[in-house]
Image (tube, rainbow, N blue to C red):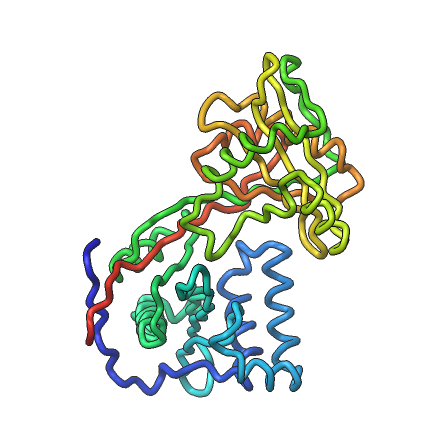
Length: 328
């Protein structure tokens, strides 16, 4: 892989490290201003939580000592002019398999201050921070409909690794007809090996540091069932069959305070009817829930998911910085 030389940043009085004790309310306002048009309910809750955290002295004391040890946006950089925060970048550390990852997030510049290189300077500062803290990998994600940001990140050496779409559906809607040749039943234990294989392809190991498959929620057996019982998690599983052969599987995971999560497993090709039928089954069976969500590779069965009544909320490019990082 090509290497990327990250230049030493020139000292700039406008660019400074995030001060967790006093900057959170201003950063929350900035994030809301920059992303209001694309922010969902979860994003709005995130902004509100940021504001609440900025007023919670107990949280702030804890956060000051936990900056690089928990996977939360507790560190980063801001761009400040005349006492006003007009730019921000957050850094979120992750650890997985003895490797350290940094996710660069919340890159935001006030709309009337863009095209001045502020976003680039903030991102470079975040990259240098991650490198100085011995990151093994540096990642970020960006909406597919933001070509300016994509070009910026590509210029800094980030390369697209995955493209994933977030799908949402409201329960209680009119449901489409499904293929009568697809039979749906509660999942049998014997379906798990093939379901697991399909899931591995749809939720690749490359992203395990960020989104690990919750196998204790998904797999059958006594031990996972006991785990779900003791943590009070109610899951449901369905299998779809075509001509007596397993054609797909689905698991429902309830989520408190957000849309419930669906985990769909299907073969790389030929599973359109099974995917649509499983999703319609979930919407019909879970009508007492408010909303369902699905995170799926952008290129996999989009028409089948849409046919079930799901709406594509956003598609994200997951980008990784070139490595290794040479000494500066």
